Length: 185
Image (cartoon, rainbow, N blue to C red; front, side, top):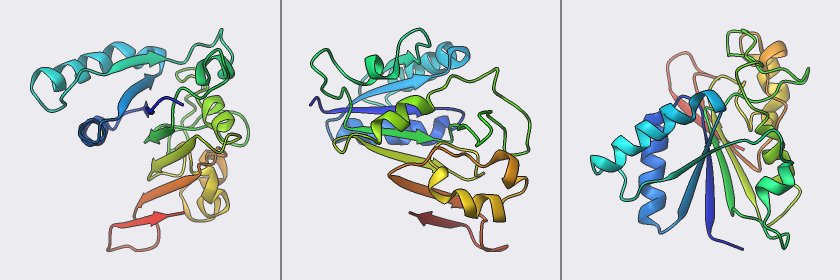
C-alpha cells in the first residue's frame, strides 16, 4: 500500500491548508480531490500556499472522474488501495434521498460530484480509513450521526448526510448555546 492521504475539499481552505502543512511535515503524500467546478480555484489556492511557504510542497489536485468507476479511482491495477486515509472536510455529502443539500436546505446536486462513492467503497476495506469533519450535518461522514443530525440540526430530516465515516469529527453548537464543541464518534 502506498503511504497516500486523500483530502476531499469543499470550501474550508484555511483548515485544509493547516492539514496539508501538518501532513507534509509528517511525510505524507497528499492528493486533494475537488469537484469539477472547484479544481481551478483549489489548484490556485494551493499553488499560492506553496509559493508563500504555507505548505512545503505543491499538492496534486484531481477531480472525481464520473466516467471511471470508484474502484478504478481508489485502487491500483493490482487491487491495492492508492490511499491510506480519505478525509472529507466540510464536504457536502449525499442525503438519504440521493441529493446534496446546503445546511439551509438548498439543493446542490447539480454542482457536486458523487465523491461519496469513494468514501463508501473505502469503508469496505479495513486498510483505508475514512474521516469526516463537519458542522452542519450535511457533510460527508455525518451519516455516522445520522439520527442525531435529523433530530438536532435545522432542516436535519432533509439535509442529513447519509454517508458515514470511520471517524467523525463534528464541530459547532450542537448541544450548547454558549460553547463551541467538538464531538468525535
